View 1 (spheres, rainbow, N blue to C red):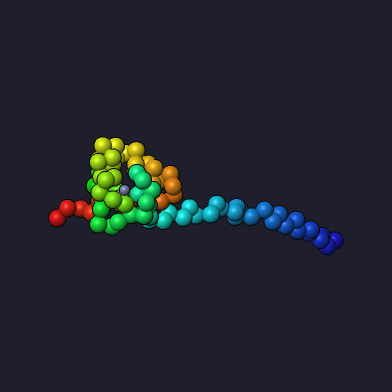
View 2: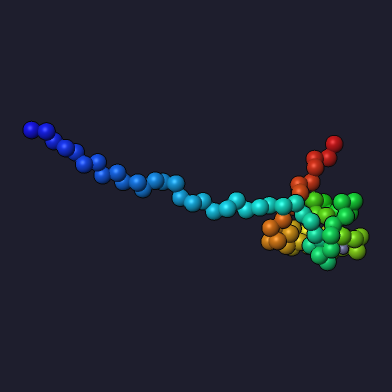
Length: 86
Ligand SMILES: [Zn+2]
C-alpha cells in the first residue's frame, strides 16, 4: 500500500529583517556651538579627540569633555579616538 506523504513545508525562516545599520558618520560639527569643525582645532579628553569650530570652544570641552562627547554621539556622529602618543 503506497503511502503518499504530504510535505508540510513550514517556510518559517529564521531570517528576520534586521534593523538598518546605524550610520556612524565622523564628527562634522562642533558640540559647543554647532559650527563646522576645523580639523586643526581639537581637545583630547577621555581618550577621545573632540574637534571644534573655533578656539573659543576649547575651554568648554576641557571643562566638561564627557558632556560634549555624549552630545556628539547623540547626533549619530562618532568621536575619534585620541591617537596614541609616540
Ligand atoms: Zn566653536
